[in-house]
Image (cartoon, rainbow, N blue to C red; front, side, top):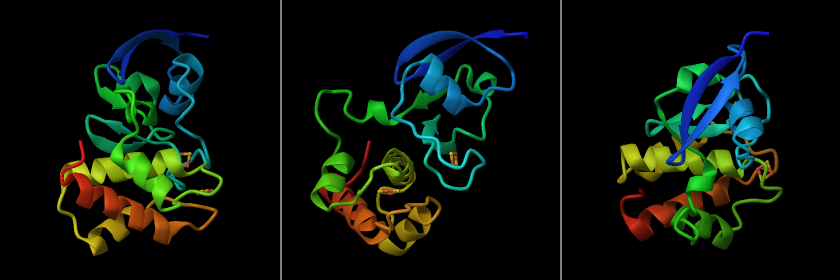
Length: 159
Ligand code: FES
Ligand code: FES
C-alpha cells in the first residue's frame, strides 16, 4: 500500500501524516490528527455532519481526499473554543437548545460560521436556506436557526 507523506494545517497546527491517496479528509482528521469533533454520518455528501472550513469555505470533509487538503487552512469545530471559552455560536446553541443528541452539531456550527464569514449581515431567509443543506435527525431546525441568528446579532460579524 503506497502512502503519501503530507502536512495538514489544522486549526493552526501542522500534522505530518502518511496517507493512502484514497483516504478522505474526515477520516484523516479524526484518525490521524485525533480531532474527533468532526462527525461522520452518511459518508457521501448528503448529511453535512462532517462540515469543516477549508480556506474559510464550508466543505464536506467526507467528499475531499486528505491529499487534496495539503497547504490549505483547515478549521474544525475544535477551533471554536481555542481561546479557552466557547464561541458565540456554541453559547447560543446551548441557550436555544439547538441540539438534542448533538451528532449534527459540529457540522451545523461550522456551516453557520462559514456562512456568516461570507455575509455577516445575511438575512433570516438566506440563513434558513444555508442551514437547510445539513440534516438533523432530531429535527431541531427551528432552534438551530434561532441560535445562529442570536449569535449573528450578538457579535455582528462572526469570526
Ligand atoms: S458524512 Fe459527510 S456529508 Fe454526511
Ligand atoms: S441534534 Fe441529533 S442529529 Fe441533530
